[in-house]
Image (cartoon, rainbow, N blue to C red):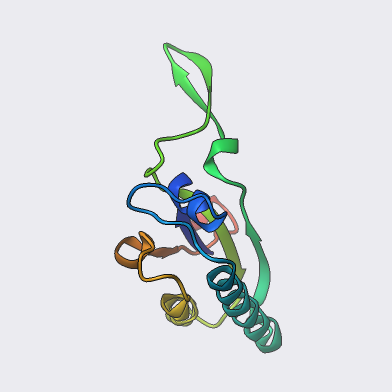
Length: 136
């Protein structure tokens, strides 16, 4: 699974609502991002390596259930605007962990504005999906 991270600040900027230190993305910048991601996904579909992929809504729409003194506690978003959360994922079925890493590394070429906060903070995580507890 290739996991992409983002913050509420990132979502706001991409939606055209910039803030201090994170100016709004233009429609052209968003179009370039969408075009790149569509090509990346289509390449995986054509190679037969694509299994599933989804983007997730903004962190402001998140709920977290935690345990406090043995009781569940529900906390609604938003999280601090700079706290990163899972923004989306892509599941690939490929020959090796190295191949999954190679696929994910192509995302480093994702177009974004020079002023975007993700220029210096961008990352994706790659983790194998296990089929059962014996694989832990």
